[in-house]
Length: 351
Image (cartoon, rainbow, N blue to C red; front, side, top):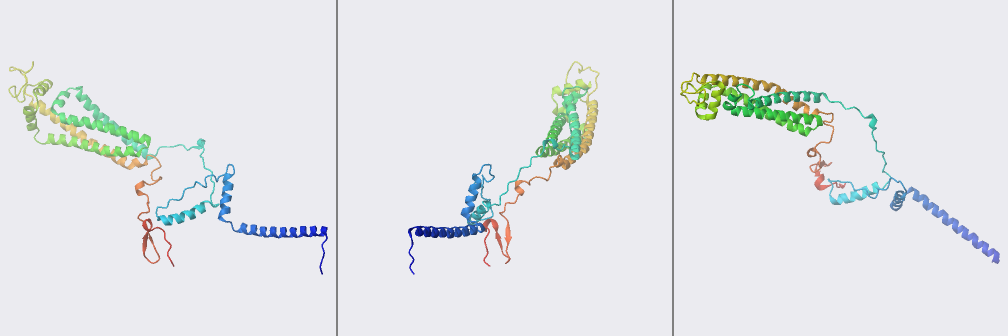
């Protein structure tokens, strides 16, 4: 049966059909949207990140500028494939914003010196004291501030120079130790420990030289020195200080002066010079060998306490030479073979 549509009825029917088509299209679009909710595409994820980064005060502003992870144990092709995967993982929602912890300045813990630092300070003060004493003794001799200083300057010049150098070195080492202790600087304390060994060698050398000269044939050594090593000025200074004339008698290498002449009553210088030299050398090696014991105490204390002047020893990063560089790492495989990760990279084995 053929149905004839009126003009008004035709328009209503067309509007009804258009509404139906629109309803079907809306249902299909809603179904697609529901499916998209369960499966997020990379393009939609990228647009979401761009939308988040465009918002003000967004923590996602630096997402696009994040560098690729550095993987030195992978080859270039493996690194490229892994870089794409890591970049997509960085762009995902796995980033977290963590607030930086700022310690309260008013609650700062009071720093206290360690026991090792106090012990090292005590040992270094001891080094400073006897180093200063040795240097003062040498200066008193050079400035002739005691009675027989001129005899020491002329007769034991080399030993006096060694004593002066030892005093200066010990004093400088102690000042270097004070700087390292106060600044908590282990580099300075390293040189401090090295210089302590040099000071030890100098003190031992002074004791050995003075003991050896005093022990064997001191009379022959002093006679040879008077006749062949001393100058005219040196002999005259010894004669004036010891109130003598010549070595054995007036005729034995004397130096003329207002008190040393042919009819003088002054004795020869051998007895007085030899007696004073023996006494001075004996005192010198006794003092030098006695200083070795406190110096060993200072040296051992410095070796044991230099790394513990604060509480940071062993709590920082290791030196660069001891860090792992992945070049020698070898990974084992289920078949028993091995691959070098730095040379071969990470490879997928076919099962």
